[in-house]
View 1 (cartoon, rainbow, N blue to C red):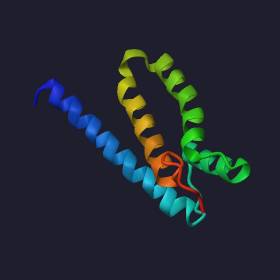
View 2: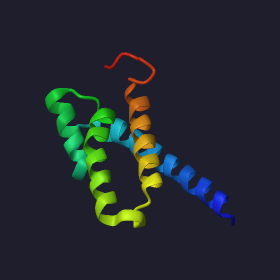
View 3: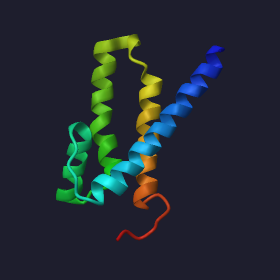
Length: 106
């Protein structure tokens, strides 16, 4: 498998995984008021306390972590894949919550 094909395959799998995780977060965790751990748990707490969309709070919480990770890991950190993951996950959550296509929330 060539390097370009491998990179495209990796990015496709990242987008697919993030879509599944994002829709699961919205339609299982948020819909049933379930707790989660880590950054996602903090995102859910921010949503319940301040009604901030999880897509935006995920970006706000993950950007500093990516910067710190890149600083400590340097070139060993696959930063392109991390940013693809963050973008795909936030887009999936945005689409699932209806804010991206401006649908009213229930």
